[in-house]
Length: 90
Image (cartoon, rainbow, N blue to C red; front, side, top):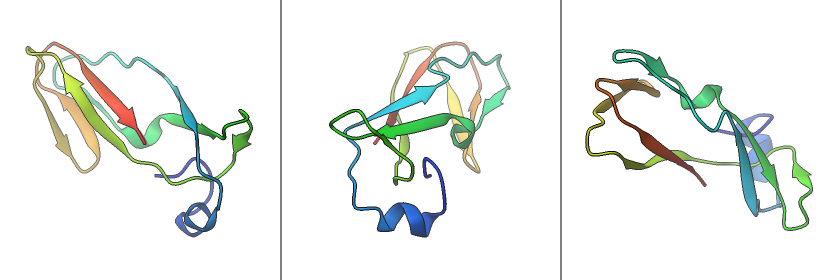
């Protein structure tokens, strides 16, 4: 995944993001519904809070509530039961 641009542009960028801002921070899903992390808007910023227009990143599941059951299929997270998960952007 890349903030903006192509894989080649992002990987050739020499700036290292200090932090990311993610929109929407919360996504509510009913059982059986899905969400594609690729549809989240992720903006990368450097140490001086300047926007980095193209940077490589990864989105992964950091944690989940004990009662949450989900599956991942073709880059889509599908809620199979109630609960919550936390995604991490690096």
